[in-house]
Amino acid sequence: MDRLKRSLHVPARTASPYRFTEPRWRSALVAHSGPAPAVTAAMSDFGYRTDELHGRANLPDDLAMTGPVQLLTPEGAGFLREIVHALKPCAVHNDYVVSHRLRGVEALSPFVHDMVRDSSFLRRASHLVGVPLVPHPIRDAGVQINYYEPSRTTVQAAPVAKWHRDGMNYVFTMTLSDHGEHEGGDYIYYRGHPDAFDRSREEITAAGPDHPHVRTAPFQHVGDTMFTRGSRVYHAVTPVTRGHRTTLAVSLFCPLLGDQDENRFWHSAPDDGLLRTVSNWRALRQAVRRPATYCRRESIPILPMPRTR
Ligand SMILES: [Fe+2]
Image (tube, rainbow, N blue to C red; front, side, top):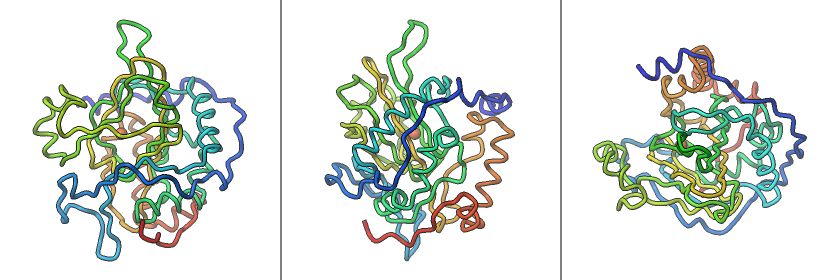
């Protein structure tokens, strides 16, 4: 009922216009390697059974999490940092899941628009996960920026991300702040099955990072990126008590696995409003049925199968 009520009003898409002169995107800003990730976990490490996975015999899809990895060169991550800073006045506040954020970033930022359609970028992301990935057909949710900082007033709580699972399966979260620039603001996740989380939600929420099955993602530097199977791993962000933390979340989609997505209509309706969600939903159904048509229409390169990660 709460989601229905929220869906019926048309939310503000941006809080103010965006007039920043961005650097131009180019493929050379994609990083092709980096240090070995500190964390790599399979779905079985999160308690998933084989029959709960989306993959198929010739396309295993069992990676739950890996990172930090680099998707962009230091120069590319630096450009993105300037852009998300310039976009901050556009972000809106709400109390739904992430309390200060900007959705549909590629509609505002030509740099981000071109980045997520770049074949080198998509090849790098696909290679890390082991399945071919393209921008998510629900473009409003495809790229979003989350802003975290201490509360400025005693009545307003500091922006956080409450414990949740995303609508999307393949989520790359890139920090655009160095860890030294803030206290708090840790990305924490539950290393276990969502059913187990649901049974102990209150206890886990109360204990936070101190819970024995809660881990902290090892983000350190601008550009550090974690791949998370966002729809299947419970995660949250602790309040920032000093400084600022900004992250960019890119959600991708595997066109070969059809209806693999965990997204539900009522997941995004409170964010985007009912009418827009209906049109987004139609786009998703069309892309699931005819992925090549979707890719052609959106100028998304169709990639060969990635080699093993
Ligand atoms: Fe999330």
